[in-house]
Amino acid sequence: MRDDKVLISAVWAFKYITDNEEFREKLEVATRESISALLFYMLDSDVHIALPAVTALKSLSKSEKYAGMFAECGAVKVVEGVFSNAKGLMLANDVCEILANLTSKSKTIVEEVLNSQLHLLVAKLLFSETNVNKDAVYLVCNCFFYANGKQLQELINEGLLIKCLGLLATNSPTTNFLILNVLKQILAKIKDCESKNTVIKQLEETGAMERIGEMCYVQNDANAKLAECILESISLEESMSF
Image (tube, rainbow, N blue to C red):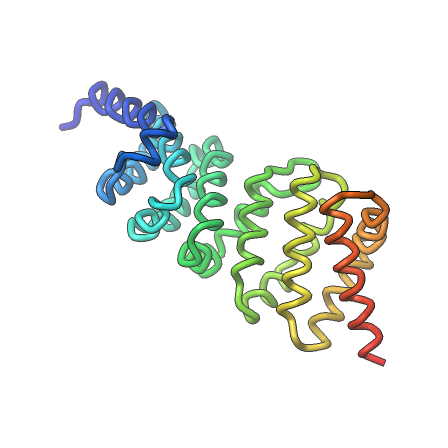
């Protein structure tokens, strides 16, 4: 029989240790076993246990050296479990941040997210024009960035590119930069004309082509340079198709 008071104190203590960046980066503050335990506690029905566990995992997920441990501990499967219950909706933003951090560091995690179709659930819950969660955007963009040709086509067919394009110029410059970078990668990765034409059509239908054109006129801006590069790539593609 567990002592919840002791457990809550222990999880909160671990949370405060992981919050300290110097401890987190210079010391081995976590092991595979402790991350596994925190993932287990994240599923706990008692929010006083689940909340500090999630917060500690958020801190650890920011560090490159713990990303492999998350993969070994089956983090994606646990996150699926969190999203499947009512408490998961309350923790959704925090869990999404963990996934966004991990998918930026581990291709293995990206593969697991795509295979489980967890990215679709995240997009549905947290990624709309009226309720944009920046970590959900990062997560979806990380999936695009690391996806192979087949996975890339599936992501486009699932409508996630349209969701990203719908946020262009309506969000922060950082989010715009991320989406433009992904679009540049997509145009470079897709080889067949039909798929590229699908992307160009989506750009036109969402009004993203016009927004990208407007971005080109912002001087000394990283987004403007990216926007110019994308339009040049599209123009070249269209000229080659004739």
